[in-house]
Length: 429
Image (cartoon, rainbow, N blue to C red; front, side, top):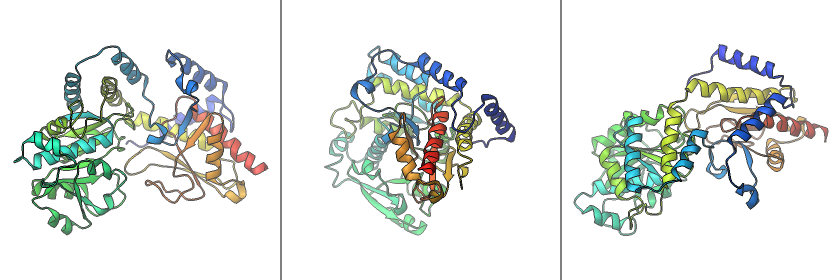
């Protein structure tokens, strides 16, 4: 991702001065702009969040599934709405969408899955099929997962790469073989090995991507990279397939800004073709329940078109502008220190870290987060708030973490005002 230039920073600073933003205030122009934008883009039909009594939130956390991840851009939402108007033959749509995506992302083949976890399952099933070519494919499809005994089913993984999404692979009945060193990795390959799995966002592990690929290919085994949260930068959508990974997984509802229940499985033609054989709508497959509706298939394609039209520098400048605006609003709080941090891998966008002395202010970051959550509108901050380093974010018990990249137009000013109010009220109490 391109760094913010000094000229860009000064331009954004001048914008803030012209907007007349004072600590704790929401400018009339900004409020008007937010109102106009909301009116212009408000969809027709009944508001079922209100009808069901579900609280809408301002997402100052990030693209977390429990917060329904990202919000689709207007062009993506409109594509989803238009796709809902007409039935099509699903397999025709899946095939055409896969070919289109593969061409756009410079890989051999592609499949739109029901999220990143589904892509992991389908990629694993495909690897099992290719490793057991002496068994008819239709038999393998029926035997995954419960009847897999007797088939090759070992997946090599670094011990540090075991994670919350292991079940996505275990759903295929595989057996994990853990390694820690390069020598262990070399000796772990057997006649039963079907896949070498790599978690791109892992904070540990001594074996790098290039060595992981090189050794797997030396033994004739495909390797899969779970890069679910690794956009931006946009170029990661083709960096890992070009690096040599046979399968690469991305979430559709995070940085790509597509439907949350969509994802991407990119890679070699033979493996993607095998993944398709295990996917919905084919009956009696491990992927039968992993349906991707026509609306989500189209939404995923539209999201890729939207993303590829964006500028890395432009997105970076806008996100940093929001962070700077919020930081300025609380700059005069006693002991307040602010800095912008960009994780090296996964969610690689600016995060605002606000560190202060809770004893001087009168409220801990966790308590501030709860005040923001209970207020109106409800605001969720990053879950690294008040914790010891989480997901690569250098936080501690005295740090409030604001994820600014999923904020909508005008919401940065609301977060700034509410945050300042919470901290000021804590000092008065």
